[in-house]
Length: 408
Image (tube, rainbow, N blue to C red):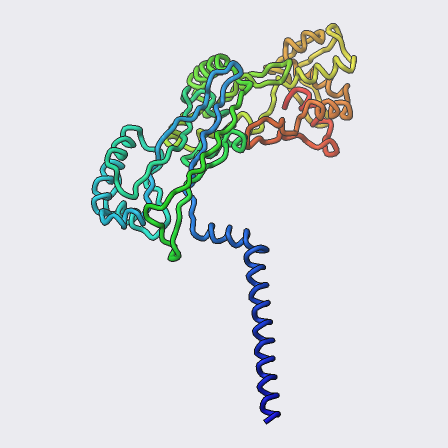
């Protein structure tokens, strides 16, 4: 009898111990979940029951150096659907019938989109104001309008290759609009939509709205008037010469600021899809060109800086000169005869500039080439810039020095 009583007491003690351990384990677990991981788990739960509808920010204004607007943002409504609310209304067929003709969409395809198992569906982006108002007047269940921003270039094709383009998602795709996208793009806002446990949007749920932050404004070195004149004259040359491409750059020599930059053929960034993609190529920065006789001014500045010539230093041009086995002819294949340094610049004399370059020598010539930035990108604030082509000094020969001196 005593043995039985002892066994019972042991069992009770064991059960009590197990119960106590279980209590402390569950209590500890609850404490861990509630207080240690509480914030983390609450955040995950919120993420699991909500979805975000992005709201685009308004891109900053891009203006010329005098404050004239070259790229602005205008408001445009976009249509979206919350399928759960459309289905809950039992009016999905009516919604599709009334909405399709306004948006120029196929009714069957629209019906499929507004009844999908998704948190939200973009129906059409950046619609015209009059269409937007008609949709508001219809007050269709589950159909919403959110204000988005659309890029607009008020000057049309003016400075198109500088400004670039923006896409329907309000992101810069080319030009300045792409290069400074993080600056002028701002920060997106959002509409937060709640879901139930089955991942279905909750009809009539409270939707949180987080407003977007507009982008910063940008002022260019471009002068609208100079840009207009440069493009007008470029159009004349492009047409007269029946050229395949043409480029003009106007720079302030004192500061290096770009006052105008244009290419032909061109495009209107408001309707860039209507033009061949090749029209958007920025020839001014993406292609390498022989400087030609403009390089003679650079060679002349080197020689004057090194004091190996002055304006009266004599030169003689016989019409050609030999460098190694190569013969270099003069401008227009004629001899200029006796000239001063000032005259060889005026006459753009190949033979005399070859003599100047060879007198400077390889070491000094490359010192100045590197100083001027030849063979290096300029660092212009535009995407896609290509570096110029320059023979590395260690591979350069006398004939290279000779031809570079006159720009070929």
